[in-house]
Image (cartoon, rainbow, N blue to C red; front, side, top):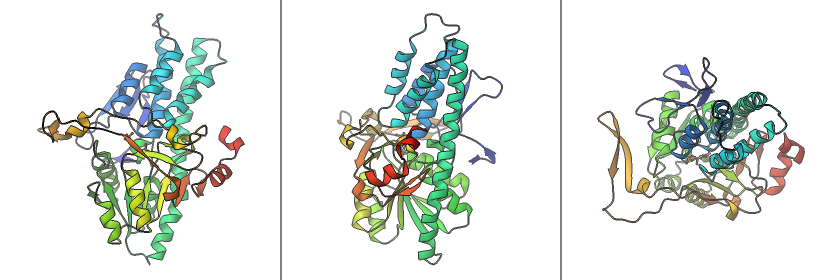
Length: 369
Ligand code: MRU
């Protein structure tokens, strides 16, 4: 996607120095567009943990580059930690999105038969780049498969405005390009479909207000920011035609974790007969899960609830919004049952959110690819 006319991915290798991985620093958007350089696996761990980079596909790809950087730096650093310890630390940076562990395991698997460090470095780099390209392609295909859903809605509405509600940021910043929930939206907008997006602010970190509103604005997609509690009322007024959200981890039965508040939107959508779609790449499906209670739900620092981050006098500022000493609880994600989901939009096509249809789309041999 373009930022001020220039095409960006959310992560890339420095073209003049392959020992540097560059990312868009999402902590300062939309107020300041900054690029951060990651040079070590510790830089990568910190960037994932403090949400410089965030969103399920992007944290997976970033962690993959983290293993590459660990191997690269171990050339000079002879007292290096074992790669397994580094891998486990990277995986622990954020627990809910399965993409993270999957990407790290894939890199480890790719280098297992290499005999020399140079060979390992080269394979790790190539595998991380492949993973990035695959996530990019996943998002593009999600856009292609999701587009007809919006086109059909536009047809049913006789080309009157299609209102789509989204939660958090499942946009290109959370992926490599296009996004998941936003990919069909961008493609429909590019095709000239008359659409508008309701953007949930997504407390406490405000990914909707800060990132989704910024992304959509940069691309010229009409949108309106709403508080997290507004969606239900809009649905009752008939002002939401469909909901599209992303996912951090889905069971093979279609139950899924996504940003806290997703569940309440699904409940409201069900009550109001509003179609509720989950757009996700297969890298966000955890095939080993027996049920959704096994999904680890990230609990974050209560300070994120007690303070609102904003921009004041050219600096990032934290404003306290509760009395001193107020206890706060900060769940990062919630679980939504498949029974509230109208359909999944994946890189292989759309399907119902149930084990039979998901398995049919991703047959065993395909899951191994
Ligand atoms: O805490 P975040 O900002 O990493 O949460 C992101 C989300 O919940 C997204 O909806 C999810 O990762 C899907 S991104 C394509």
